[in-house]
Image 1: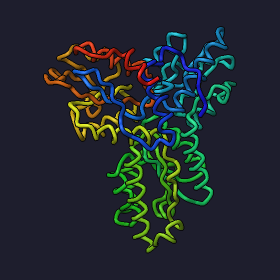
Image 2: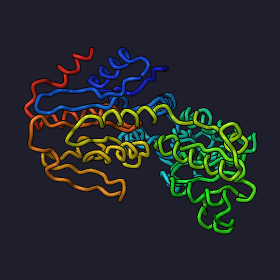
Image 3: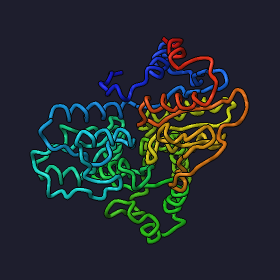
Image 4: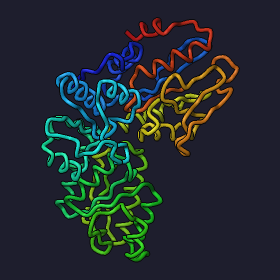
Length: 408
């Protein structure tokens, strides 16, 4: 796989050594057991896969290279390039300005842009309407496009099944930048509707089977379907694609459920189901799958609590939190600074979108066992910072430097 030129500030000597060692001994990525960092009185288990994915490293390389090569030009980002506050702050320090917030609300008037300005397209992609708007201003969007290749893969698959007259069902968060972009690209070719979860999949199935009448659809799915969508005509042949950062298991469950609905509606079996339902399993992102599967392996360890590091508006990170919460106390933090002391931590509750304080989060016992993972947009340096902070609260037998050497 391609090696990217990423700023050294995002790297971690410890984690780089660990990841390189695991790659050597597990080339086929079959082993999802965590890596143990044994400090003695505290034992930290790192997920087999975590941190920057291919798409994120690709985006960072393009963005920083663009800044370096164009020192005298105004440089903008359409919106947050990735959902990590440190990376976005670093770009802003280098003069990059955001045109929109993550929900598409304008921060800088587009009529102030000129053809000489640079606009970097984020890893989530861009809607066709926005692309046309920028191109009309004379701004070349392709040259500075950091769209993740795996997001583009979803777009391409949507176009392929559209050519076979399938309607596209997008499993994703309707307001997320990636979902908005995927919806836009799919809707260009075929009727498209966005569903957020299994509850909405069940609701949609009632329009497939005819249990609910068309007028209800337009109210219940308001703002989530393409122009001219017809429940009578456009739900006869469907295929499911996803926002790449959703829980892969959720997308698969939704796909299986809707597939079953089509089988029941039209009396099909496994040999004839393709007449009504497209196979789109190949659109699931490898990094999302690996990180989520690695958390499953991580949770095999009997531990005291878990820490998940990443941006609070990161979809893939919140799903890692969701998985951990099912098993043990879990704290979602975006930096080591959130660990205030050995007795207090400030963490994010993604269910309520608020930060909370928890006291006495480290139990009084020996050894304390902690699970750690991070989102696909989280620099490894942040994870190492969390490990360093935790180590200060214990009498340790091994330093981080000593442990790093054991993986070299």
